[in-house]
Image 1: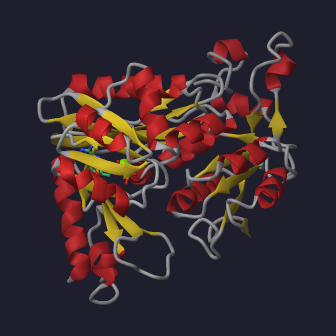
Image 2: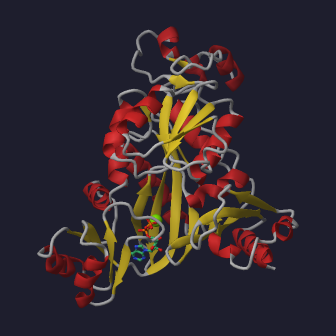
Image 3: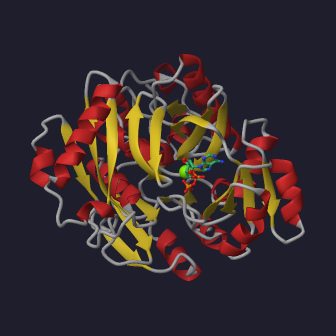
Length: 427
Ligand SMILES: Nc1ncnc2c1ncn2[C@@H]1O[C@H](COP(=O)(O)OP(=O)(O)O)[C@@H](O)[C@H]1O
Ligand SMILES: [Mg+2]
């Protein structure tokens, strides 16, 4: 185990155990920046560049107010950190757990600036924060991941271009920004294809299927003639994701690949470990590491992959934050993706990602409320199933309200079990 980012092992730190590290890292009072120590400067005056460790007691700022921030805040508070969150809405899933909830638009650069001044480190649970806001935060606090990584991951064209430029496998794609681009894009990508807005898409929003070349013009109209990407439609065998974390010192750690099933372009069920060949799993983990290194990424991210019917691995997209598919790590792994995000941004040793047992997660969308309140007691009657609800008051169709996780002796059994429990919610 490493005692802080930048130290390669305990011998180098001059300590014998994690407990010894604690002794070297006395807790500090709750004032921004006061809980940051560059201990390498104390023990090794040569390495003034070693990034500082942000210790328990410090204040972590989360831009975004959704369920990803909520579960991050739970992990952070368990470890004794304070959490501030900024989002446009009131009483957000994150705000309900955080110490402080600030209500402001992400476009409100002054509000973001003030928010950053009040915390020790800023991270994201929502990636569509404008570049100007990320830059304002970076001027006043440590921001992890960095603004460049965010700018790439929040824009599908920049993202695909970045991946292709680094020799990472992606489906054929082309940019569409004006009428004149339509024919060239179709010639390059072919049919069938998917047209996606370059920015602000999530859960399949901003996407149109293209069956034949004549569909493309009208589809671009439907998307409001905004900058878009045309992607070849991939004949999918499976979708998987890899969640990984990396510290400023370059330590990195992946979770086992997770298998994902979507319904109407929204994640429905995740199963881990993914039931795929070991070689494909190793390749996906290696691609994730390469993505993180190329972005000089500090924090936690998820790479979504397609596995084609003929067994090839393609990168679909990068999420610069915890991911819905990683929710099962909360119950199934020694360290959850949320605690790992905290450890990575704070420069703490990364935790073990070992799974206690194979696991499956089923999303609970607002649709489930159609016939009235779900029968919570019926799902809770499954002793091997855990219920997570995000504290959202209005259950709209397609809205992620919570999830269930089941652990079992095999991935297939866990999946069957979580689906049974979800069915029981409807009675
Ligand atoms: N090029 C494609 N070929 C086949 N399926 C696709 C393609 N692009 C997207 N999809 C399907 O739609 C889902 C959502 O698309 P994605 O690009 O990941 O956007 P989002 O940001 O909404 O998650 C994918 O997980 C996959 O199931
Ligand atoms: Mg996706």
